[in-house]
Amino acid sequence: MSNNQNGSVSLTIADDGLATISFYHPAQNSLPSALLKELAEMITFAGIDHKTKVILLKSEGDRTFCAGASFDELLQIKDKQAGAEFFSGFANVINACRKSPKIIIARVQGKTVGGGVGLAAAADYCLATEAAFVKLSELAIGIGPFVISPAVTRKIGLPAFSQLTIRATDFQTAQWAKEKGLYNEVYSDIPNMDEAILLLTQKLCAYHPDALTGLKQILWEGTEDWDELLLERAAISGELVLSEFTQEALKGFLKK
Image (tube, rainbow, N blue to C red):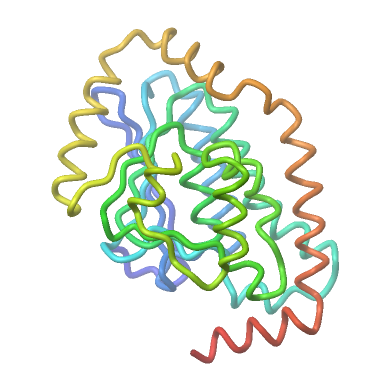
């Protein structure tokens, strides 16, 4: 595992055309704005690289896939513009996944919270372990999952999204996430999941690339307005994070 205390994002492209994008941050793979920017850029690059056939999105470690936004950075936001710019980082990652011409497979090895759920939802196909519980905790800290809501609702539907959002302090199981459509496959442990990912990506890399691109377009039909929509949602979150309620809630979470 990387020992970079600022976190990192890496990209490797194998001979068979599998592009693996991996992110890491010591705070449970949370995502500050710098990592969000790198992640969006690497997803975009892998999508247009002629060697890439399929993209695998993963994080390092074996406990948490992604803890969502960086609370430390959220506390540093002092004005609406800075807030909108921070949350637009998640918007840019989701839109990079949406607009990539390559199929994106997500590997979710552990718990995923907030924006991490949005990352899983932005993938085209998602494999997870039984430890990959999910939670949208935004209401508990005075904001809402506004930026990621189009991606999550598209996958699991409005009733399940409502449950996940309103039950802001409760984790839902990986099996729940599979039943609702966020995860496509759930495995007992990481080795079994990785074996399934290897077999799946090998098959996909052998398929006709134009057929995969055509499938990608079909999967994302009706989302053409997301460039504007997600940035509008980012502005809402960026304003709410400035509230006294949210600032105190964030401090409380960091003290735990």
